[in-house]
Image 1 (tube, helix red, strand yellow):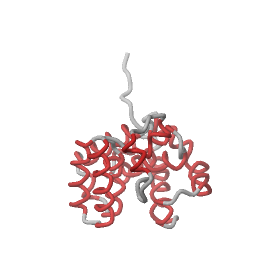
Image 2 (cartoon, rainbow, N blue to C red; image 1 turned 90 degrees about the vertical axis):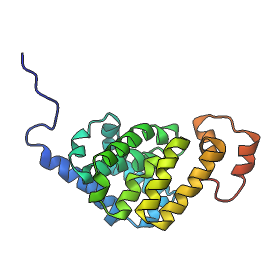
Image 3 (cartoon, rainbow, N blue to C red; image 1 turned 60 degrees about the vertical axis):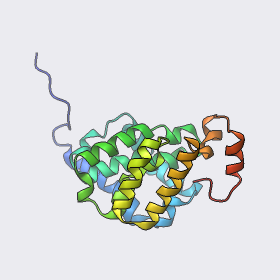
Image 4 (cartoon, helix red, strand yellow; image 1 turned 120 degrees about the vertical axis):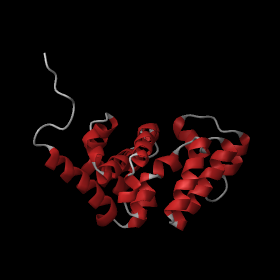
Length: 196
């Protein structure tokens, strides 16, 4: 008995392209870039309404056909890394897709994807590195953001890396993830700029 290799169903490539382009158009053209870094319940609801089901599919690795192109790879990482944080804000589920997003970003880099993207797009492809709680991953993140040449993003990576180097994790996630904070972390969280 012959089995068909997994892959896009015949005739569905166009639909795949339309959806991934919708993700990229929404993120890079439709919204004000300030929304990327602002906690706004209304904006979170917009993303939930438009892309909530897509996030569930991405979490099940059902968007793998997107990985055929650089833009598709970026769109999948955006859904897993950014949309997850908006849709599940202040919930452990906000970080649940981080390992998959990081693995896909690493795979994209190995495939040469960054060369086909703009500096701003690369900044988002690299975000799973910045979001990692691994010091080893931040060694890579520091280099990636330095080489990308967007100073503001590089400065943010340095701030994130300093926290990981000091604590081995992000203290601002402790309460959400049910982790006990050390005395040093509690004092740190009282400082301005300690939460991202």
